[in-house]
Length: 435
Figure 1: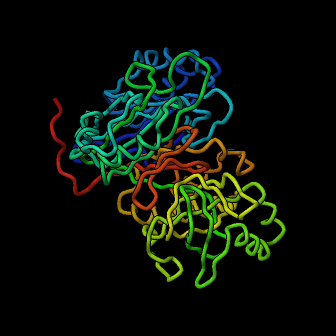
Figure 2: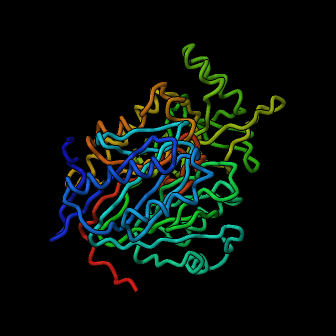
Figure 3: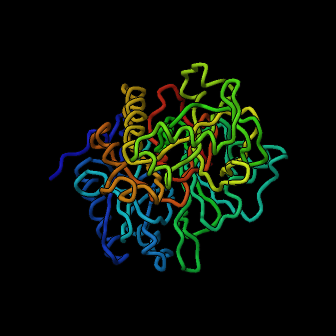
């Protein structure tokens, strides 16, 4: 019988916080539900966790899409939790009977995490995203639309249906209404069934769903973009919307294509081959000069964006981000080793920051382009996380876009791993009473 995880509980006053997880790869939905219930009940017995969970997080493969409306009713008939939230994904992240987190891609899988969080203040919401409030209007319109109190929250889990037509506006509006809150999540998986991909209480819905977390608990976010810079930092001299026309470095100006050609001469053959299919542009999230040596990771964070086109007539490049003159940019390469090194460094920083109070659980929302496709082997991201946090229970999904903060602003990403670590807030007072 496996020993209980060192991270499966934290004592909080007279109560214990607990995290119980289960993972099944059964192709039948009924069999998968039966297996996760069995695992969760066994973990309840071993951990002495009793009673109703505060929050159940459920992530199922889109292989179950046609049966998705039956998933929550089946689970709720056998498990007790006050709130239920989840999504279907192109793959799932889960922690099964062995206690080791796994990434399951391109096959049926069901992951369930039951959280008992003494002192937590949880506010669940479901949003119809067909018509959003005005981004130029009052932020209180957004708050009323969500139907939650920003003063009671410190973090947000956000899941969006792939049919949502204005995801970037949605994310910007939620940042507008709930500033300073860490937001992590992703876009759920596509499927051909005639219903949505999101799970809320006992329903399958479209739009967006989420949970605001406050009281004595919060989420520490971490976004791993998986790139390493090549060449110097440039400044944009000319740009039109998302097209970069001229870059400068010191007194020298040139087209982006000419700048890239000069960088190619400094690369080895392997790196030059990567440029053909794994080249991106990092956009600095600060107006301060990176070239002048700023070392604050928050103020100098790069937002990595796709290069979506080149104009050979004038050497301009189109980028999947609106740009402006004066912004600093740097070409980036994405590969497995760069992704490993970046994630290890970010996790090392996270471990140092949370050394006095380790996380209770981890959430991972990973791009469908990561996993085996990036690392060449399974469990690429979770294995790195568990080297830094041995035994940490994890859950999540492979997404069609990942949501997380860079430089204090929430963005929709691609090819990233957006992680959230559930941690206690030592300084927090008792949560407001809920009606």
